[in-house]
Image (cartoon, rainbow, N blue to C red):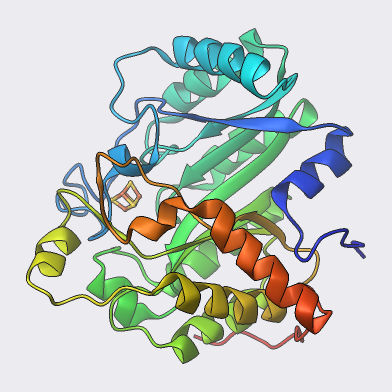
Length: 311
Ligand code: SF4
């Protein structure tokens, strides 16, 4: 059982436990597309998605090798980091033939400072052969697969044009865990037409699954997305910072103590962020959340109990 030295099991705490020092994650665009954008499933993408809004190198013409080299140089100086995790973040990073995947993942071997391989993708964009390939990196690296899910409610998944169901995710989760690969799940809190009860039901459902990590952020509007148009016509309500902190406080009490929290707040490129502006005040969100936990004298997992997930 994890002993929490903080109010929640932060990614930093987890990495220090694994490596005994600070490890910097570097976000990369390995040149993949996404089936929800390339026409395989849809050309519209998820209604909130603009990769340029959240991924530094998205759409960059720089080679993967140059992105890694540049990031290592930058964080070695600015954050005094010696160890790094290659985070294949932009678009869907298993969306290619196995030979292409191998060629791109292998680039990390040129950098001895890299100790981890994190791959972000969709649950319908992976199969046994790809999982086998990814699991081979466990010999030399800390390996995680991060699946975008955003909500466990099929009605909302359809409304945001995810083009997969929660059942699809559950099937992939089971397959992935057979290879003993760590699974992180990306969730968006406050999507249109969701209530606080819906969000807390997400937390209860996820807490009953074989998931090792979670990445949370509040719903926000990025330029050039379908939700941008709706927002401009006043059809979308966004959470205030206070509302988001209150929901986070309840959400984290419901998930297990040993579920790693990769992120509690996103930051968006100001050139692409429409609203709300507070999302880029990450320190305030985390600070207010910590105060709430301290005042109550509790931490992540306080209300956690296992329940079986039926969708
Ligand atoms: S959020 Fe992910 S799955 Fe959805 S369109 Fe964007 S890259 Fe594709």
